[in-house]
Image (tube, rainbow, N blue to C red; front, side, top):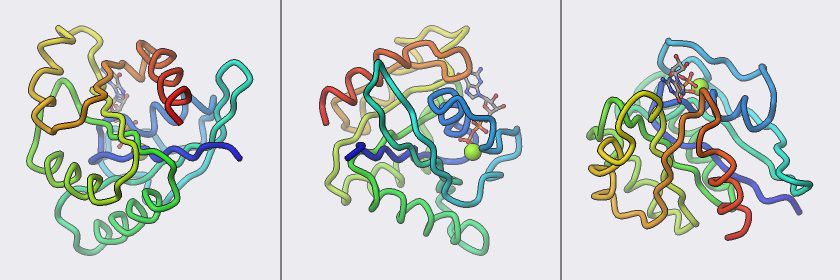
Length: 162
Ligand code: GDP
Ligand code: MG
């Protein structure tokens, strides 16, 4: 069985960008409009012959009414389906209250979690990452999904762990 990995995080952190890079697909909607991907989306990735399933989600905003509530349900469903959670945060924007809420939601799932500090291109990666350690996840990866920086190291670790 392929391991199933869910990409979780608030809108606009780069989930669909990473999904597209790992699945070499242009199908997921990637845009500057927060929350554009509103349903779960599935793709297959491969690392040196080891394949895995990825789930892209619309993301949790913390304000779960209307379309946001639908997205929240999709996100929870994705987390339930997953063997591990890739929790993505925005290293340029910094830690937000929504990130802290999502971290709590993730923790109750009791699954392996990998924290990805994204968008570290053009910024001091260690400085951008430092505040996210307060979320309490041991595995913190610095990535730039748009360039692919850090992504192979990340996926090697994830697949070795599972
Ligand atoms: P999602 O809502 O979490 O799926 O986020 P998207 O993948 O749609 O990306 C939101 C925005 O962030 C887009 O404009 C992306 O081009 C941009 N973005 C994604 N990853 C990176 C990155 O590594 N570096 C930078 N600078 N921008 C990124
Ligand atoms: Mg998206």
